[in-house]
Amino acid sequence: MKTNRITFIFHSFSRVPWGGAKMVFMYANYLSDHGCLVTICFDCLNTMNRGLVFEPIRRLLCRLAVSVEPRWYPLNPSIKKQCIFGIKDSEVPDSDHVVATAAETAYGVSSLSNSKGKKHYFIQGFEKWGISEKDVRASFRFGMSNIVVSDWLFDLVQKESGVKPTLIKNPIDATVFYEESIKRNNNAVAVLYHEGSHKGFDDLWKALTMVHEKNPELVVNAFGTPARPSWFPEWVVYTQNATQSELRKIYSSSLVYACATINEGFGLTLAESMFCGCALCSTDFLGVHEYANTNCALISPVGDYSALADNICKLLLNPDYALTLAAKGKAYAMSQCSMRKSFNALEEEFCLK
Image 1 (cartoon, one colour):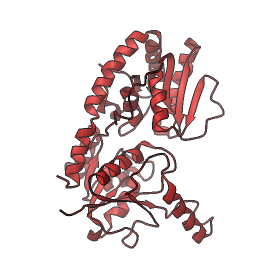
Image 2 (tube, helix red, strand yellow):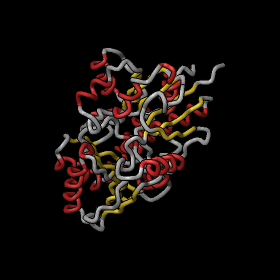
Image 3 (cartoon, one colour):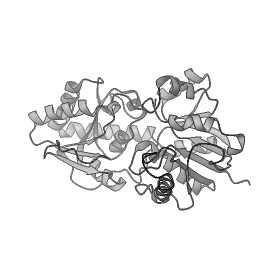
Image 4 (tube, rainbow, N blue to C red):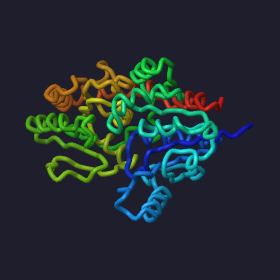
């Protein structure tokens, strides 16, 4: 039986954790475990201030970084990592399948020759922060095999391209994200600190400030990739570049997970927190409906930080209600974010069945 050669293309190496990369790395590990020869190419054409560093030194530093990253995610040793300088035939290895992992890489992958493999496009959101909205929409029509992570993206991409994409909903690994046997603080709220405007942290912070005014015992268990902001008060506990085990502990020790996202394809941390027994308070962004609804979470309008604050207070004031809601949320999220369903769809997409 022929061994599948599969190449994933990233726009740069991944030094800090982020959800989109985590999903691709998980799938790369799975495909490698199931007999595929997997290569991950990191395009460093414009990495490390191109033009400001002597070019041979810059390229050497990029190759060194690719050789050790990602240190935050355990890639299978059998996966080959390759530093490339431009998504073009001379840089990308021949394969049976080649995968663009974001809108920023879709244009390069679409122009590769057939020797690089069947072209796939892994779409995890409406990624208009790297390129224009018009160009994002155009990328859906390149004729690649489009893969989407949520039902709303399925509808959007099908409408734009005229072709049904493959739906592979983001799974959560229940062997990693589960309720630890530790005391859950009934005044603790877990949050993701993110500087991207689409994540809505400004609204979230306004909501948390309102909650703290009503409940001075509030503890915010925050995590993110930037350094701790100097303006965070003492009632915020911050973990930078949290490992998966640290995330599990954060979720398991918090009563509530709060999110004020404006626009996101899925929202991985929300589902992870639900697997770990948090009650969810979220804005009504499109991705949240992939694993939550009004029967198992408190959902407020996007941008309405006052309503979000009210929902957080409602749970903190009634921990029994919060735990009941969390149990419903966990059951629903686990039914929607199944590893087996996603891996079955992955095997079909890459012809492993």
